[in-house]
Length: 67
Image 1 (spheres, rainbow, N blue to C red):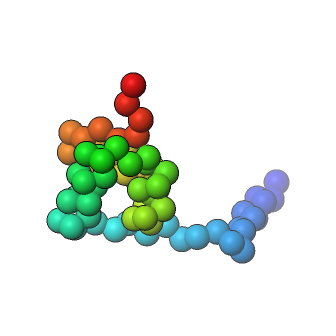
Image 2: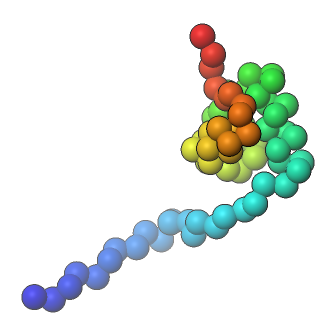
């Protein structure tokens, strides 16, 4: 049985990892304190919501809405 070739999307982006700089962490702390929505932070920083949530978890910060 022949293997199927993987279909690749022309619009697919290559994922690259970027380390957090001190300024990135400082900005994330400021957004956490200001209770900025995660979607807005993601657009400003160019990182995914999941990446921001994981970093905030490691730093002991809370992101998103708080009831």
